[in-house]
Length: 162
Image 1 (cartoon, rainbow, N blue to C red):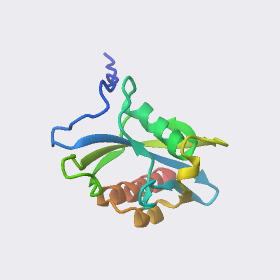
Image 2: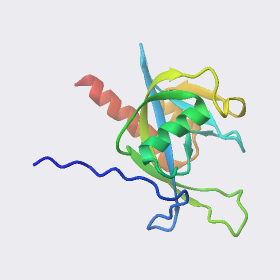
Image 3: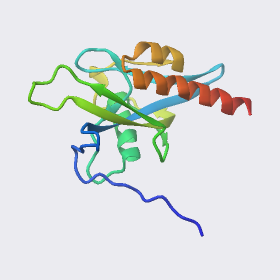
């Protein structure tokens, strides 16, 4: 008997996880260049630090669909998104008012790059760069995201060797 995974669709934008954190969704955008695996990092709008495209769950969409949408809105990229998350990480946002919840959990979905739009919603607000996963890990601040990036590089190297 074949079972199918149930598609979970967001019913609200702000989802509180069992650990008391707010849920967000991200896309780890990657592509294969002739000599190496590259991932896309972008700058945040507020501080200009390096991140990957992420945002709030979208009502009526799966987390995977939302990750793909964030990749387009923030970086103008499209591609095939993984059905399941490749990992998750926690972070705190320290520039919010004290009365706001500032603890987040981010589910990360891999997105295999296929095309770059000429124009997209946040084009003038961010800078994007394609770098190797280890360099991306050095650029981002979140420890859990660093681990995901390094693990992604190791996984892709293992798959290429098989």
